[in-house]
Length: 183
Image (cartoon, rainbow, N blue to C red; front, side, top):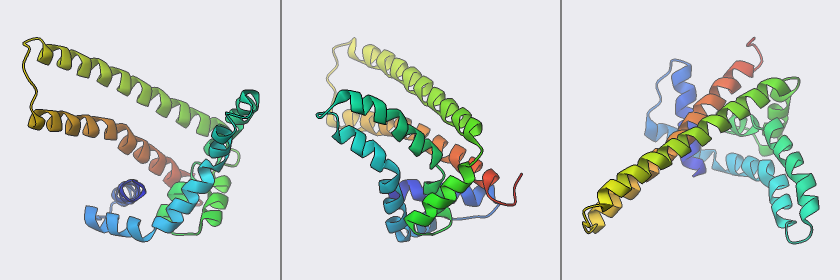
């Protein structure tokens, strides 16, 4: 998953810069940068992992640590694009992400809440559409074969992948605008 998302981010960044990068070249670069991106992702989600691990111990502690984990994730949200676009070690990527976020809490909150609203609305509308299609398809008592089931799962995967690609594009655009040398 990190290789695919890394390839998408690399390709989106190249397109935004007016360059051409083939999908296979983007995936090859993302695979070469997998150790940096995986290490950065692990460090980014470490507070969330700790909060989830503490659920059986004390729910109130999780309630207190949950918002802190989300805040840290938001504050360092540009670290993962830094690890992919500017190949650097995870700690350096976290530093770059923190530098880009410094003094921009309002922008980050607006970006995150807008992205969350988009994804929630998209998933809700997609669910309604899929429910309508499934109910119409099931009215005639038709039997569903393996090919039809496979096609429906493929379509569902494509529909669910759209918000991930969109979020990558939004974050790459914000990252490019916040880098030093940009207003």
